[in-house]
Amino acid sequence: MMRAWALPALMVACGVPVAATQAAWGSGWTAAVSLVLFVLLGGLHSPLMFPRPVGAAEALRRSAVDGRPVVYWRAGCKYCLRLRFRLGRGARQVHWVDIWRDPDGAAAVREANGGDETVPTVVVAGRPYTNPDPGWVRGQLPPAV
Figure (tube, rainbow, N blue to C red):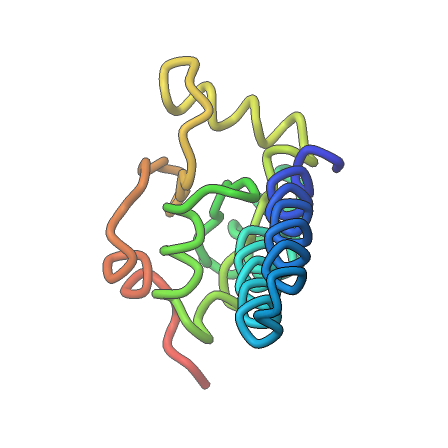
């Protein structure tokens, strides 16, 4: 759990001294903008940008019932973030598994990728796809009702 928050915390921790230094030099607006920028970057790379994850076993069970893809991801991964943003509202239709929270999910990713924890790994109909095109993943989602 802590590992997922390390990068966002580091970004905010770096932003505070940068903003403090700029404020000390008399540049209040620049300090405020810098601090907001670092906080936003930290937020973008945090687990808050993704729907609530479920365990790997539960995600696979749900996927077998409703046919929706399972996405294995981790916080701080720029490719996972790209997939999340490109899916837009469709991201809520996907079963998300955080491999840093779920050891079974990490094991499934290593099995699919020859021992590497390469994410995002998307499982559709029982078949894994490593870092697929977000447009293709969007096409695998069921039509909205």
